[in-house]
Image (tube, rainbow, N blue to C red):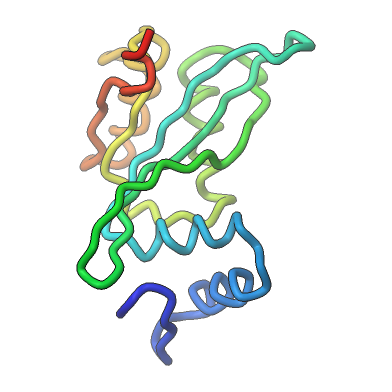
Length: 148
């Protein structure tokens, strides 16, 4: 099915996304593109805002196909205020945010974070918690952190 086309079997969710995109909702356009792509990855990083509250920025990376041309898109989705700075809280925050965003977890194949133990830890890091729940999701070092 070409990007943006609806069929009788596409389901209510896809039809709702198409309606919101047609109405000019840019957030739903990103979600629709990510859900129509074959796969996507999640990227997240925590930092303190100007008032000192810890927050998590969440983005996705996905491949958009149009007329046999492929482009990789990285999109910022939003911020989540964190109650605690531990791996469990951060992993739950990422998964809840993505679920509320309407992303299809069956298409989630990768996750990218910095290399701190809370995020990348192989025993009890965020990446391990998410990988335990979604077995095919691999972890990679976020390329944006390599710029530093």
